[in-house]
Length: 393
Image (cartoon, rainbow, N blue to C red):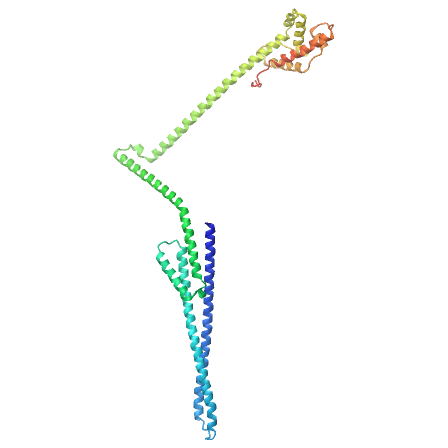
């Protein structure tokens, strides 16, 4: 579409250039016509001067009284001069007539070119305008253009009318294609306008029905006030927003309550696990538990001693009486437990801590130390709190 429009604009520009050249040619012909008119005027003046000169010479010759003997000799040059003047006069008259004929032809040509340019301009205006009711005028103008080009000839007009006809055909084709492509959008627009018109008609009928109902039934005075209606509408909007905020607040409060309950359960589980851990550690560190364990067989006593003496002298001596409400002592015990797991005591330290004699064999001591290491690791790493508990409590 854009290419066709650009091509048509280029052709229109060429036609305008041709019209400009024709206008320049017409101006040149007008200048030539004025020059020929001036030349013909000069010829007329010269001819009038020659005729006046002959008229002046005639009486002067007649006034002179020549002798009888010399009169015959003077008549021959006078006759020859008169014949020459007549020939020149005839020649000048013929040239003047030819110039006048050429001038008339040039005037006719100028008038024809002016008419052609005017008709071409009118046809361009009708073609480029969006007026649809001037088709007959455009057809008559086109016929005039064709007749003018035929009368003047293609060598004079340069085929500008034929080129303009081609431009018109191209322009009509492009416009028809544009109308065909835009037809769908136009139909959609008409359909949308018809739908809006139907909706407007329904709205008008509904308003008429409401108006009739309002006229039939009396309206209370408070409802008749437009300001009261506006306030009532704003109040309804405020009530709806308030209900929405209330429901949102209730949902948030319920979620907060559920979170608090879940947190309390987790804290209770944590306290129970911490109490069981402290109880187990207290029992492990108790001397009664060690004495009861010594009544068993030797291997079991040694393994049990190695198991529960891994906390070291510092942990055993640093243990305080622990109650379930004591949070700080529990934390210290747990830290001591982890410290014992990291720093493993030697065999003499274990025997000195248990008040035993260091007289056993080396292999037995190594076996007991390995057994103590494995069980100490299991004892330390087994009672751990769940990873999801919050240790900030």
